[in-house]
Figure 1 (cartoon, rainbow, N blue to C red):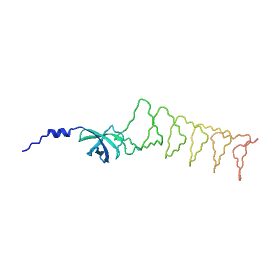
Figure 2: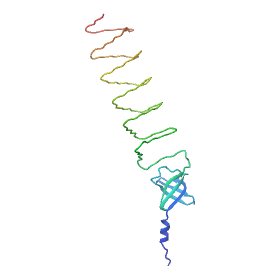
Figure 3: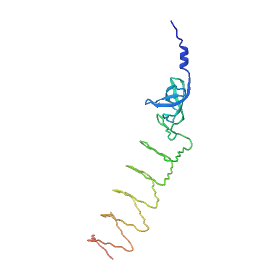
Length: 212
């Protein structure tokens, strides 16, 4: 009867792992297959501190207490260095007691199911801005627009105000199909020269009419 000692086997299984290799496959269960520099194959998970998503062909660093608990802790060299992706399994929060700056030499894209922005004060400067959306609902205490040209195109415009004032220094022109002006109190039209013309009919109707 042969007796096989178990202590050497346990000691070998508990040997720490620390090596480099090339990522060969990304598995759907959040595991990776890595081929070590010595040709040995490793199946591991990504460590929580490794935020850069590994891609096939990357040179990675593996580490763990034993071969059954091996983690991909860092991406040493990317196979395609033109694209880098920061990826986390849960909520990602970036916090700093100071300033946080994002700089991009090309495009800066943001995409989300919901976008919330909150700040005490803010400034936005864009040389050329195009906005496309379905609904825009804004509530402000004071709105002030200053510009050289203002154009608006809409199927229907509704404005409601308690008091309204419009000052035009030069010429104001209105082209409509039908014009209906109604005042519950007094309606006053005054100018140095006033001309009222119609191609078919001009009608003035009131209880009293004073001319002159």
